[in-house]
Image 1 (cartoon, helix red, strand yellow):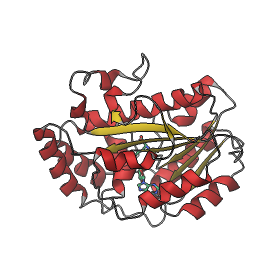
Image 2 (cartoon, helix red, strand yellow):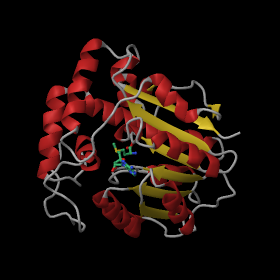
Image 3 (cartoon, protein in one colour):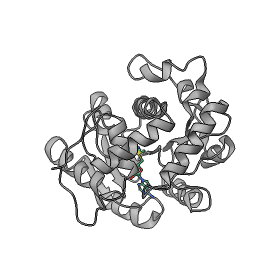
Length: 283
Ligand SMILES: C[S@@+](CC[C@H](N)C(=O)[O-])C[C@H]1O[C@@H](n2cnc3c(N)ncnc32)[C@H](O)[C@@H]1O
């Protein structure tokens, strides 16, 4: 696995004494935007939950499948909240493969992810079609104003709002439910909500035990996690038309020949993935 780079640009205000979920996630995926503190933390988590790396990769595959699904439904605009450190084959790259006029606004509240996202887009993006914002999912009005202020997204055309592997960083009671409901109000008709969520509910007992230890570990990072049940996760989609097959385990969602390698390994025991996914369309 990659060892990251200590010389990478560190934006002001970034605490490199504490591990961070965005950078640790990047390390799990084999990226290089992480520091010793993140890698050390990641190694400790993998010791208690060795399957996590596979979970993370299966989640990333889902993100790409979901982008292609939305494109197939005619959606050409993406609002990727909690987009993370840019890593190989990001949302705009997957979308551009299908339509070079597609648009994408990335959002994250982790300064390293934002700084690296901006560098990536400066080099390989199109400022008319791509942007990277520093904003907080929970601060809806600010995020929405910034996102629409980029001019990248047309508020009258459907937008796919991606909130993938993010909501478990906002356990129930911290405002995520209210925030997502507000975005659903703001988004135009025909928009999609796509989300995934880590869980230790309804999973095999050994996975549940591992996930509970990993949850404890994450309390040491500056981004603790909190699991939701299937019902709690499903509630985010309420009122919108569910995309078949509804809220399911990640290996059960629209597998294809392009981005399903990891998920396919769990075809016979999907709950091993510890990851719920789903999508819905605004009527
Ligand atoms: C596990 S990564 C997921 C990255 C990407 N969505 C994916 O699935 O590959 C979670 C990201 O959510 C970001 N995040 C966590 N809480 C957030 C918040 N309140 N607002 C915006 N981003 C947040 C983290 O900084 C991190 O980059």
